[in-house]
Amino acid sequence: MANVTAALEPTLDGAIARLSALTAQAFADIGAALPALDFEYASAVAAGLTERATVLAALGAQWIISDFGTFAELAKWASRVRGDIAYERLEDHAALIYCAGAIALHQVGAEQTLPDASACLDRYRQRLLAGRAGLDRNLVVATAEHPASWMTNTGQAAAFDELAGIIDTLLEDAALDARIRARWLLWLGANQMHADQRQAAERTWSRAQASAEAARWPWLRFHLARMAVRPLIEDGHLEQAQQQLDALKSQLDYDRPLDLADYHHLRGWIALANGDPRVGRQHYELAIEAARRGALPANMLSVYEGGLAQGLLGEGREDEAERVMRAMALLSGPRGDAVRAANIALARACHARRTRAADYAGSLAEGLRHAREQGLLRFFRLSPKLAADLCADALEAGIEAEFVRRAIGARSLKPPPEATTTDTWPWPIKVYALRAFSVSVGGVTLKFEARAQMKPLALLKLLVCVEGGPIAVSRVTDALWPDLDPAPARGVFDVNVGRLRQLLTLPAAVDVSQGRIGLNPAVVWVDTRALAELARSALAPEIIGRRALALYRTPLLVHDDEESWMLAPRAHAAGWFAGAIERAVRGLAARGLRAEARTLAEQALAVEASERLARLVREIMN
Image (cartoon, rainbow, N blue to C red; front, side, top):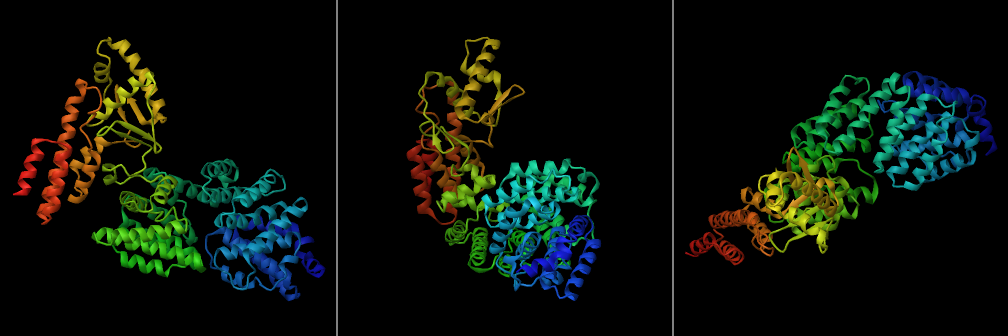
């Protein structure tokens, strides 16, 4: 194959500096660079240099995909990449360019006549490791983008880290074009984010932002700003994300339809995360329209089609959502079919949930089983509220509980309002006072034996008894240290707040500000608060009854030494329980389920022997 290397010399050896400069130019102005490469390609074809022409075509395909403004030219360049070239025998720059181009085309679904992507990746790594000391820095770093993306998309974390480390040693080379350096940092951060390396991604983007190119290159400014929006959405900072998108709109280039498509993708994602599926669906319709104008390949269009489907689900249009899902060009082969089956099963579960169908539990179990088998922790990724609803229902029903808890943790999903009235959601801390008092942190029940823990525990119990949020510190000190004057009482209070935070292991669990103290409801779930919310909820009668019995096992802190500050909260808790049970019993009776209503009332009376519940039992038995 020495003749192949010789044939490449006019372009890749004798004129490598020109190709290197053309690559840097393509990153800044692809419209000017592509005609120059086209000339190189036509010259190679005219000279009968098939291998040289194929390698140049692979470079052109990389440029177009890397620019990501429009793929209108991609089909032409993809058709020029010959699959019958003996790529495994290419050397140095030729091997890097061809293999990276083939990998790039695989990622956009242009797989016709291309060699296997994994084989190309192996060849790319071999040539990089063997010859990087003598390789042109611009071409090495520029071609690394697509192998890096392939590695993250296929879960090859170790190989990705190795490649990132190699490229990092080249970034300070004076021979490296600043645009290529900045672009690598941008896409490296994107791949790190895709690989769930969030902190590494943010550090990488900071390096890109600090470069001189960030100030003078509109393309880089736009995409850095776009990349910064996604973590804000995933963290739930939706208002801040919206503000950044408003600022980004002024930078949109409407001649770059794929930029416009991604802008609408982010708008739609924010709307879905805000629980506004109609607006989300409208933005995804605009994203799909722009993506088609930009000739985005079908397999990449699925990102926007998935958003459209989730918007339709949120609007209760499950049949339309399923049709969109069936038409999506997902991964080919068994994996793609399995992912599609999971999404469709979950869509059907959404329909069963909305219509309160009897087979909801079965539909949910099927959908989550498919999701678990395919490792889809981020199902319905763009609609966290929809995903959280399904997760909450699954946990209460005991469906795929381990997988669901992993999904909640991986995505930091917030519990839906109804989930606060049961203890099945994996809150960091759970406190029980309507049974033998206990505290669990991260699912592990704490043991309290040391004498020094008694006062912090008394403080926690008092806070559990509080209705309506934080209370004045002075009320706490009066209740727990009545014999101390205000100043020393406050000192003892501060010490015990510190000890309580240490016991709970999460300082954010206890809020002290502006002279008031309370348990942070975002971190600490408390059964007394859950019972109060259940008594006010609009849930179905059978759910209210079942949850009330699960929460109220004994009167509040009945096993503790009685303190005066416990008495009123204990009466309130008993009242919430009786009120919830009465609503549930009457609701069941109104639906003709008198036997179920009578059983519920009798079970409640056995737990709390109040006159109110006794009257309810007598009434329902008549």
